[in-house]
Length: 348
Ligand code: AHG
Ligand code: MN
Ligand code: MN
Image (cartoon, rainbow, N blue to C red):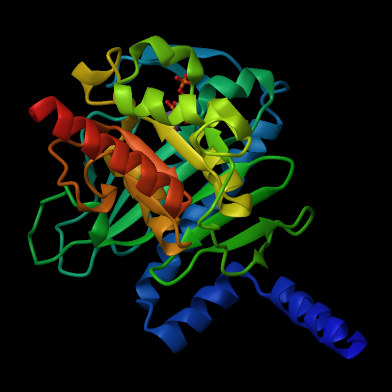
């Protein structure tokens, strides 16, 4: 037993020695990861490191509060939204195979070169949960990478299933980078001092069962029947139809919600409701829903808009919004079933 524990500790400390570059190089060697992707992922990691520094020093650098502009979504931009967006462009824009990027903060795609087959398209939310910056709670950056399919192809509206990498940085008590390059989800913690991202969370998985849900319950009056039914049943606890008590969390930062779900399970809902239906939902498909859906599926969970798998949705615009329900597979399946049953009863 003691030997077993010792081996486990040795194994863990070996992992903690592995840097992001070491991990990606090994993946390129053993699992056929495109080596030119390594440079782009490392540039994303550098951009996130810079954003983490700006966040930590924001109060000293007078970077809290509003920028005084609205973005393409009509949302007030924070100074830090703009700073984070500029860091991504400055650092990732120099990646040799990056053809174009799409940012939450910019109306149009930004092209860097004539697209060639195998080049990369980068989609990102530079600062997610930015309403939390002034109150010093966790925020993040979300990213997604797809390939250009053929020379000269400027089609940028890619379905989530064509992503070859997605991930996020979380700026929490520990800054982390969590990513998938298509086989499993790996978490790297940024070591204070060296700034290295080291593999501390190999193969993150989401348990299929959970007793924790996350939703902005202040929108209860707007919800559709299937969402009300699901939440009402959770709230009823051990004397209700679920026969057990549920816990609830809401951080208003999708990155923090997904990170919690990847760490201990749970389900996250930002559904379509009467208040956001005209816009299509709240969260954006290309740089919020799709990258998180890939991570969640790679960790053994599920992600749906209530009717369809998020990764199968065909985008109709760069900033398209979609309903999002993701996390532990059994709960997501249950909520999807409630939507199907409701659609059936409405039709009959
Ligand atoms: P962003 O800061 O990039 O605009 O995203 C905020 C998103 C998401 O992170 C979070 O889940 C949700 O908006 C919070 O919405 P509420 O303000 O309705 O709670
Ligand atoms: Mn966001
Ligand atoms: Mn944002």
